[in-house]
Image 1: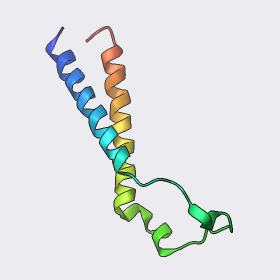
Image 2 (image 1 turned 90 degrees about the vertical axis):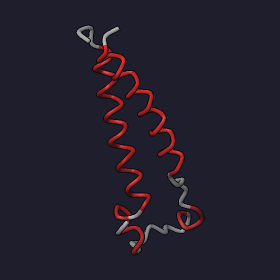
Image 3 (image 1 turned 60 degrees about the vertical axis):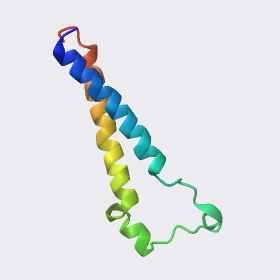
Image 4 (image 1 turned 120 degrees about the horizontal axis):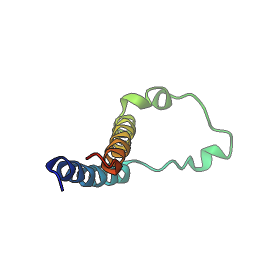
Length: 80
């Protein structure tokens, strides 16, 4: 096993652990009773959601998942 393969495997395991923690930190997507009454109003919270902690967690999750797929594809190559 080459050194690069060992490093990539360690990075993949760490990425999996971090993705799990970040996903568990996110809030649920339940809309509650407001969704039954058509409560999809544009509020201050919904307009600025990307600047909130929840928006940052979503962005971090997306980056980590892309990194997961890239490392997985690299480990699957027969060259390394």
